[in-house]
Length: 72
Image: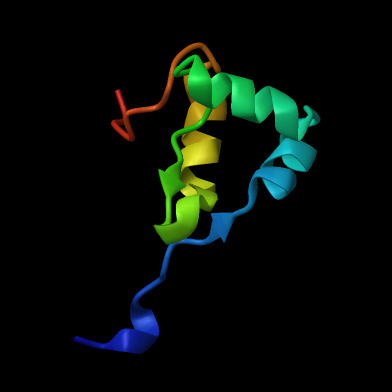
């Protein structure tokens, strides 16, 4: 496998995503509790991160529900 051609996903902090979406970090936190907003992951220690692709997929899907990562 050629590592040079493998693109690793870029992960963003909640503050970076909030800035990108022009919402507060508190809004993102509320969305996580409500199962809304872009898909996210929790790392060891509880750190939340958002994959750039997941945020873009959520925007394209119309921002209604959590993105499943599937393209329809």
